[in-house]
Image (cartoon, rainbow, N blue to C red; front, side, top):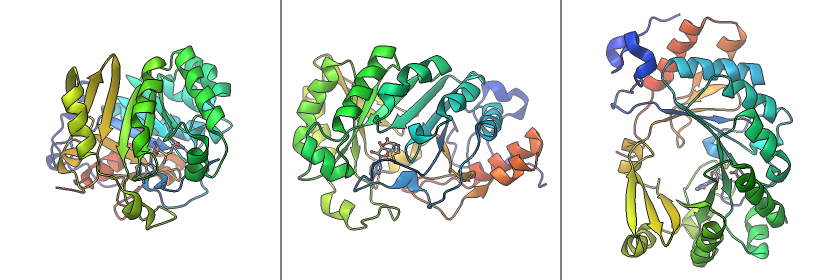
Length: 324
Ligand code: SAM
């Protein structure tokens, strides 16, 4: 096993619990985003599949626990679980319970919400803090066009259940697409405001993982103009430094965040996230697959926590801003 190259990293091993590990660009590693599965029950027309290369492999709840334990020992504070659709996993409550036993500052999940009505209370009881639910439209035909499924009502019921059980703050992820849903922002904002939900507008990302590679070019809608408008009408604006510098607008008692990853050097400069693929590789960047670091075989071989930490450090050393 290779020795840890301390000099490459700006980190303090002596006081690890209090310090974030930083990458070669001085970006702290605060959160770990784990793609639990590539399986999904909808088929969104724009989906980048979390930048994952297709794989049917998944990690067990115990393996996920080990990975999160090592991440915690390196200073990671937040875990986000994603997919595919994370709620498609039958052992999802056990996964949350195991990760929650490590006492992270924040455990969240990104889900399409269609199974959330059934699972929300169990997830909350198991230790999940909050959810982001992907919902691009409140219109049934548009929902079917985007997802190829007629699940709008289940997604909405799941969202309302998440609010009811206190998976707070519930956020709605709305990917904005030209001529598809850009005119629905106001309706979605009022749906969110009425139900105590934060609205997150997301710029459509072009990705080689998208099944229709022309879709994002044809339907891309720049969020700059929307942001200018929000800035004009907002009562207050807050910049979330370690959340890729994204801005949050407080308007008329509601909240809107804007996520603009496309060609955005500020987004990359403030990225504090490391990813894990469903087949157990460390993925340093959403938009790249040529710098992954194998992790799960080492977990399965029973490597020590110290050795697993070194593998994490290799992944962190591979981090570099996609846009600079
Ligand atoms: N199935 C879960 C869901 O629907 O939220 C989690 C997986 S999904 C890949 C995670 C998030 O990525 C969703 O909020 C989705 O809207 C967003 N997303 C997927 N493809 C995207 C793209 N091309 N551009 C921007 N966001 C995208």
